[in-house]
Image (tube, rainbow, N blue to C red; front, top):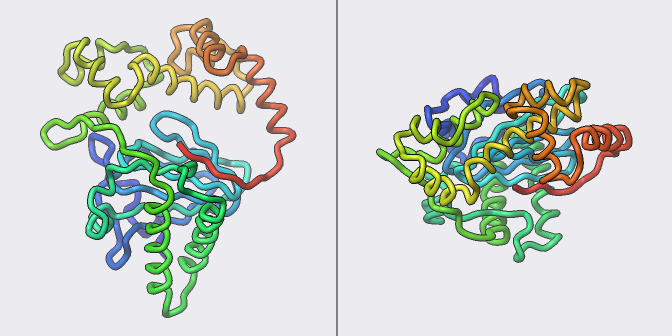
Length: 303
């Protein structure tokens, strides 16, 4: 069985956060079973799409700076070029499957696969299709752990069926164009830089200078590539951090604001009111109530 200790998974990551080729021979994708409650992955992206399924337990992800919950029975589709990483959960031992598809293998029968955006809420997908995704997830886990001689045939069959289902039923559009420089993805470098430094104090002029752009040109390029302004994107990164702290710690609002990169508590409160229509304290109280009453459930999550 391939697992994180046997494969160079999440270790070969370039300066623009691209995960280099770690795909096994003979398969269209890399299968990883995450079963450790304290596993932590580094932010990364790849040209192939990633299918994530939680057979048991919670395993939240950060995708392009936004938190995506993943509980028992949930599915997450991570599109090409999206910077993402999992958040360790210490409350229970999870059983989560991730399949990262090899873009070179996928593009042979399906050219330009990386240009398509996949969504679990595609108008072409029916409930039976979603149920089939769950079934495929369970079967891939079962055969990944099997030692039967036909294991390789079964896994290939399941992986290609998964690809066929995803690209026939779950394509919802075309992704935004990426910015490139010298053959590298400059958008990913910028987002990676912002993600890594989000708890520090910096502004749009600082990042524009870091990457060799004028402030005005940088703002236009950033919005074209992400659909958000620089301030909106950075605030969203910091707000996700703050919400996790509000839900899991008893630290003061002021200290959380400072820790997460907000200039002061007022800036955090403004961001909370704008997005959630409640104060930070109200969000904390609501999260605590939900955590106490929260049952396990099945569903789907999609960025």
